[in-house]
Length: 625
Image (cartoon, rainbow, N blue to C red; front, side):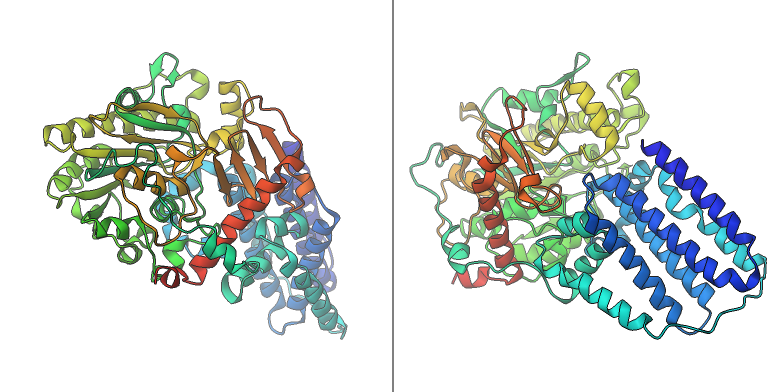
């Protein structure tokens, strides 16, 4: 159906333009205004065709009114109106193009804060090119003939000077009516799906620049519900006490890769080997990142707090007071170091790390750039040189290594590709993803051997976890290929499932724990293993070794209020109407009554909103007094 929609749109654009070129000069102004109005509406409908499943009447009404207001007000301005109208039309076309491209990659609309990261596009340009579909250029392709006609035909245009004095008042009334609905909405996804692209961008701009629409949070919930509390007598309490800690944060690493064979080829032989001895493995661990992705993972795991969803904590709140895992470890005499083979200012790391209590940051400038893959240091070179840096650290230490090669779009030199792919998986994101994951696992094995040779292995707690998914079902190719591969519909419960492994050499622990957990649970689980009792600060997570019920609140990639527990997954409807949501049983994968999810939905909202309140109001400094 989608390809026919593109054809209809192309034919409509072509013949509409041709008809305008034939009109008399004194009618041109009216026809140009009408043309760009109709083309804008057509492009918006094209956007909705690819981004929205359920169409509301208010969606089209608000979109129509939004376009009307923009061009009506532009037509009232003095000056060269033809150029002005074309420039406005160009800006709208580019914005709609970016909206469509962004939605294809992430599954939701971009925020004004995402535009603030436009300087980072160069680093991920291959990822952008990878998701660019030729049909998306429909948003831009008509600009060329329009500009050509205006510039080179040199037609002298006559304008009708008569104008309605009611234009501005009518437009103001329309704007007021459009804005009035925004404060009652709880997030941008709901606004977009109910009221359209212009209302969404108005909402988002206001929310991120002038004020915010976050609902008030009960301070009793904020302070009393999530006070830090690690039990002394819990299971595995202190089994890794006083050990050095080496953490491997694996880029775009999903859990289905563990112990998985592709056409008889073991994808992660080295991680699988680690699991066979001295390891605690949580196989139902889930990402909770927001727009910050990898940086959000860093924040959540070291603070046991939620991300801000559409805002990056690393970018927005680098000077906040925090009471992080690093602060707690510092009191126990640990030195803390982050190692990452990329620029130190990416995600504003060099500015926020001191606020988080991190002692040292070893970034790309500190490594020998022997081999670069995609936009960063190759995992092989990164792991090899990291062994030398870790050897020099003051003990006891907490050293976190953040890998990079398995980053989207999963580019790898041909000489490093070892997997033999099926024909249908060649030249696909899925195939390239498997190749880079297999490569990273290979380098991980070399790293483990390296720390063994240096005598750094036996007295360490070595932790592995994925930062976020690599293949989201919002991408049509991913959904199709992985659904065919797994034999069932590939959905967010599979995509957002990442591994968490605590490897404790010599402990004789070998356990797979299938309680549902999220990245906020990493820190309290670790504190228990280290035998650290800490009653200051806030923990939104729980110790997974000593909990009976798992619960993961989610946002960003799926609407706020969505959650997953030990039995089910609930995804809040994108239009904000609870009854339009969906839920399914994780074992049978069959739909369940969403009304059974009401309590979990409210719990998820409470957690996320309380965490937002603490961060945006810098409340941690008051909590730890």
